[in-house]
Image (cartoon, rainbow, N blue to C red; front, side, top):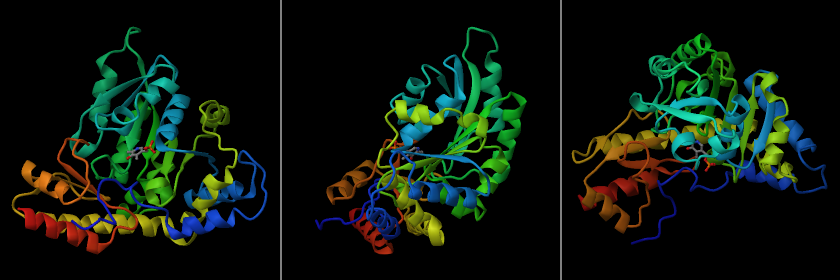
Length: 344
Ligand SMILES: *Cc1c(COP(=O)(O)O)cnc(C)c1O
């Protein structure tokens, strides 16, 4: 077995992209103001406002769990509830952090094809109860792209916004892979964020090529009130903030974030195309972003693991999850397929 230099387990197995690393090094030349008062952070915030074409408030935190849970906490009181898909990261992979940081807001899960909520599924949950004994729905959390690698279209988002308006619900987007959706839909950032009524977007940086860090974009400024205190209390205010923020400049200049996401999406498509030709495996969901979910016989999974391939089998509805990253090479895809054919 040869040592694998790339894996399909997660898009956070990859390293830092060169452009982000470069701006990180540039930020290391001089002393700077601390706690986000520095020039790098100001510059990145402005750049994000420019790219999203709106004067939003921007915050940087260390990871997605913090971004999501602090955002949701700011949308809800403890007696409220948050509607999300049953496979949502906020429900399955954050160890109760949204409930913890909101002091008890309850997460209500709904099902839906391809990892997506629908207006109907939301309405069903809202209408289930309206009495004082049940936590009042206050927010919807959508994952874009979804946990199973599909993408909400602009129309789907607008329909959900309409339903949200009907019941005065706020809209949060877990955009750990927002850029992969952007590239798939070939739209501008605003077209699938605030123009669809998203109140808060957690924009993923780590999986797009940063070492660490996610940005929180609060489009509805009233909802940003005191948010910096929330971050500080949660241990999410970096004192040397420039090292969280400066790498974003590397992503944001010259469309590097789009280039990175496009590579990940394209490799996933390459992988899916080859997998579809193998009768013993079946692709489980439309491949629209950078994930491919496949069903394959258990002995085959074991044989691939034995050959040194790492991938998860417990995410979403089960099956094998293969994630591509900003730097996944076609040779890696081909090597995986070749090993798969070999063990079949
Ligand atoms: C990776 C991921 C996150 C962030 O997870 P952390 O490990 O907390 O950074 C959030 N949402 C989704 C859908 C993810 O895949």
